[in-house]
Amino acid sequence: MKMKFEWRKKEKTIYQPKTKPEIIDVPEYQFIVISGEGNPNSDFFQECIGALYSVAYAIKMTMKKLDNPPSDYIDWTVYPLEGVWDINDEAKKNFNGQLNKDDLVFDLMIRQPDFISKEFFDEILELTKKKKPNPLLEQLRFEKITDGKCIQLLHMGSYDDEPASFELMEQYAGEMKVKRKSKIHREIYLSDFRKVPTEKLKTVLRFQLEE
Image (cartoon, rainbow, N blue to C red; front, side):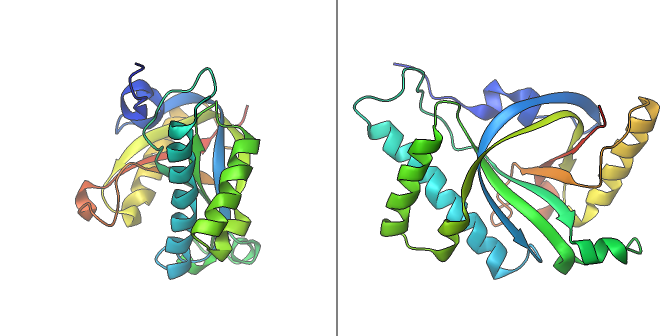
């Protein structure tokens, strides 16, 4: 019997970086994705997370019960929630250095193993709509995303303290003579913020570099 695939142990470069900046080349992965806008402390944001997880767990549990799973199938720990963050166009025009969380634009996502197909996702999405109706399920999509060359680090503590970590990453980019591609960045949430004290939160921060 194959051992369960544990991303924390098997993909440490991607999900267990150091607290100091480093350059990494991130390959193409596939994700269930939902897009939204607004404050991450809102009910809408929580509902987006709920929609993602309902399908992610349905994919995992249904695949586990299949009589004829894909040949490369192996049971896996559900991947962590990730968010790609930007601000809306209006906020960009008037940006004064102060972030208003209501202006945030996000893509929330959960990675899927390579053996999960778009067809299987579509099938499970339809089943989930019947079993756990949620209007946001209509907005879920299946996407392949390549981050490519990035700088990342592990941020410890409050999300509100992230600017200090990004400053370190920007300094490192200067030292390494590489340039940040844009102000868009990715966060990977290794801790459940509903259960973990703020000072113990672990978040991977990552931004893309110009090629």
